[in-house]
Amino acid sequence: MRICIVAEHASYRFGGEAILPIHYFARLRARGEDAWLVVHARTRDELEAAFPSDRNRFRYIEDAWFHRLLFRIGRVLPRRIAESTVSLLSMLITQYLARKIVLALRDSEGLDVVHQPIPVSPRFPSLMFGLNLPVIIGPMNGGMEYPPAFRHSESILSRVGVSFGRYFSNLVNSVLPGKKLAKVLLVANRRTRLALPGGIKGQVVELHENGVDLSIWSAPEKMRGPTSLVPKTEHFVFIGRLIDWKCLDIVIEALCQVPDAHLEVIGDGSMREAWEHLAGDLGVSSRVEFSGWLTQTECASRMQSAIALVLPSIYECGGAVVLESMAAGVAVIATKWGGPVDYIDSDSGILIEPESRRVLVEGFAAAMRKVIAAPEMARTMGLSGREKVEQYFGWEQKIDSIMHIYRETIAGFEKKQ
Figure (cartoon, one colour):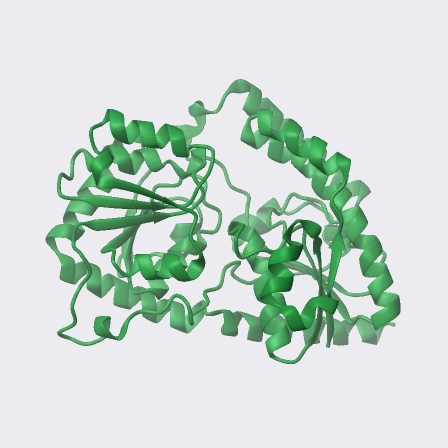
């Protein structure tokens, strides 16, 4: 098959949804498929260093003055307003440029299918239409709102901006009908299916958004035997971007109620300085280590020293880090909202109801005390999580599924020609 992966960005370093296109490309190439990746030039150096023998298979959308202008405007706006206005406009411009590249690839390489895995939001429009090729979009994951108890924390300006952005997005989906005309739309769950724009003509298929590289996120052999050792019982880890809705402050406050606990924070972002100050103000800075950004291999190594991952996020659509923790054989303590609910059950972790900020703080504190007091329980949760990931969430299983979808989509498209 001759497959074109189209994405705004593809990067191991960026994390989040940016890692998805690079996984598809890498694993398709490893299986000998004729795959190309159309992506913004901001990740050129990383991609060409990671895939030196495939440099001719990348096509780049070059950075332009309007990208830089929109980025600067977005930085001064509230996050959700920026996402639904200037970020949307920037993505549309990038997709317009990507579409021109895809058309050129179609003519030069005889493409069979176009796959657009990101953005994962079901509301973002797609310009991948009118290509005379079957188009697959997703897996998408979205349709999220904040928990009811936390919606008041958004400013009126932000709520109005988000409502306008959604209206604008629906309007643009009518004018730019990539999603409405795509042959297949992949969605991670029913919530995302309901958030798709109206008038969909193609098939909607459920396929989980995230996968796990089991060669990196592997449970050590010492955790598999009945007499295995356990990690440090007082050590917890957080991995993710340091942005407002990740709510790391919840866990920092919870540490005040768990005097023996230590927390390693892996990641970076706009809230890092504020949360470092918070740890100092609460007198727990000696028990909170901010390690900054680390590679996936380094994160996997650090994860092995923890008794549990903590994820207090209140707006987590996917939660790839949850699957990575489970793959590493480490228990998870997370907010019972959004993506983590799709992965975690009582056998593999502890979910905390987001009834209020106080309930979350006390719930995380109680869960941390629980696993410290019962490390064998935490170990059993980790083993259960590992088994679940091996069965359902490895990247190789996901590529098996996507290749089956490619073949069926191509065959159906050719029959209609």
